[in-house]
Length: 292
Image 1 (tube, rainbow, N blue to C red):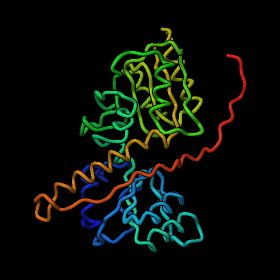
Image 2 (cartoon, helix red, strand yellow; image 1 turned 90 degrees about the vertical axis):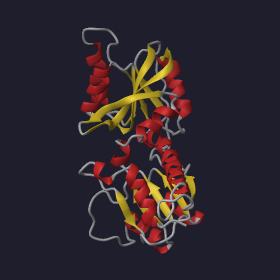
Image 3 (cartoon, rainbow, N blue to C red; image 1 turned 45 degrees about the vertical axis):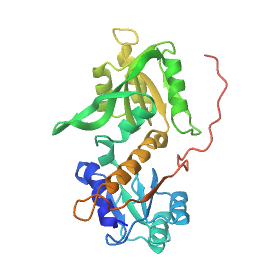
């Protein structure tokens, strides 16, 4: 079996930790680089239920998108939920690796997987990195054929894992959608919204859209020309990032299949699993009656 160091090296080669934002915390959190890895579980969040799943399945490595220890800590005593997670992982010999904003900007990365899940063809990054234009935040993509916003919203809802929050839409339901901007995770950054408008996207699919940025984006689009701005499709944060897990798992197994101790084929592979646990924090959505 490959060692943890070999697995980390493969994942780092595609999701380079140097691409992460300065505030982020990515890379190996716990685990012995010399330990052998036979099973790898991929998940979005390193929460208790996911750690329990990794332990119960006998995983040697848990790869998550979101960090467990985003902010510096002075200890990991099991008196806190994060400390308990670390203890559970180490006690049962499960390493933890995080690929967060470095996976967001990778090519392919989180937004590529989101676009593909929606049946879109990627044409390029939404916010290209100056030093590497092929990489960057978000993606611009196209539908095979234009369709009304109401149909596109149904496409989004049926293509991503279900959450209690569902899918929220801002825009004329009959508006024609062809060019789509997507950004896995929180995407209401002003620079991202400005890039969506500048690209002339018909719709923007992302998560965690707040009232004011969403309202301003819609109003800015209407200023001077009706429906000039993008329709907004807001999905649960977890749901927009979950499709990436299968990409990362496939990349790892493919790379190991072709790697030998001295670069020759036949190094061996690992058993991978993508967690289907819904770790979106919202658990209930009660629809209010209204006239529209």
